[in-house]
Amino acid sequence: MKSERIYRELKKRLARNVARERHAQGLTCEELGRRSGLHWRHIQKVEAGDANITLLTIARLAQGLDVDVGGLVSSCPDPISRPRKDRTR
Image (cartoon, rainbow, N blue to C red; front, side, top):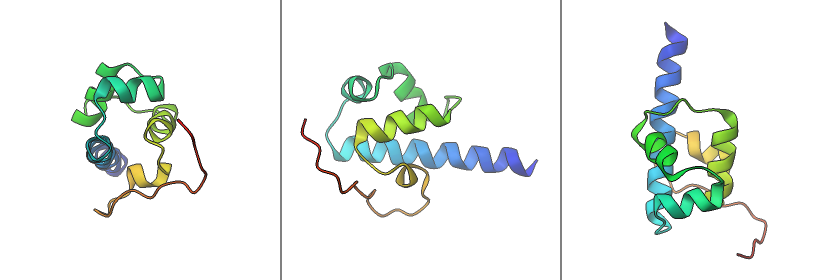
């Protein structure tokens, strides 16, 4: 089915983009888990493309990485765009 193919492609993009951004920021799965409110094992599954991803999970990952949600599902290989708001950690 076409919708299943689209879903698999989105999971693949998300997996690649989350892993790329996490590595670019020098974060471990544990640290991203603390920032996003997700268990580190779930993040590993997302990056492996093995997780059943919900919109809430995507939103939490974007928040934990401090990136735009659209960048996590984008197919372009460019760096993920940062939000313009100033966040202190």
